[in-house]
Length: 212
Image 1: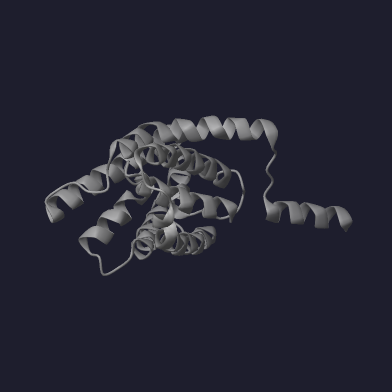
Image 2: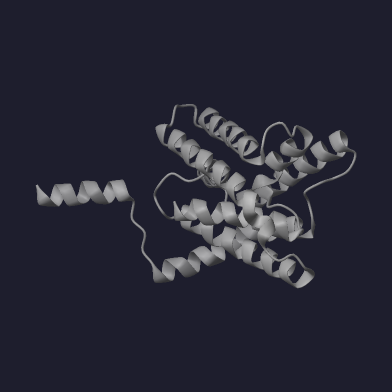
């Protein structure tokens, strides 16, 4: 849950910095601008639902754990709306905008790195590149970068053709898309040196077996 809380905050903070929204939330953001009757949070879990469905089609089977991921994604969407509600109270000037972008970039990297190691359901936008890497046997960092760039292309095309201009994408978005995969891998490596993660359910089964 900690990863979900900090990831959602990172996404909103990056958007508030004016450097552009994070790649993983750029597609829902584009739809919220083109079809504003639904909030960013609502479009986020619609998008996440499609990602979960895509993974099940690629797996060619029903995967119950993916549904738990969608529930986590729903919470993520609600948190986005919550942070958007009060984020404007933060100071807004050029130096602080730079700080917001740097902090949001690091927060998202840490959040995703934690999500990939926690052994619990994670939001579908984090789950998708991880599972796609497992399905295709392609290195995670390459899949992550490719996924982010695809999201940016969809966002650029949707806002340009529907609004007449590209919206939501900035230098920060592009920078994050091309570097965040490697950033997550780097931070993940640092985390692995300090902490050991175990699946909660597996740990419970192991303890039960020992006690019996």
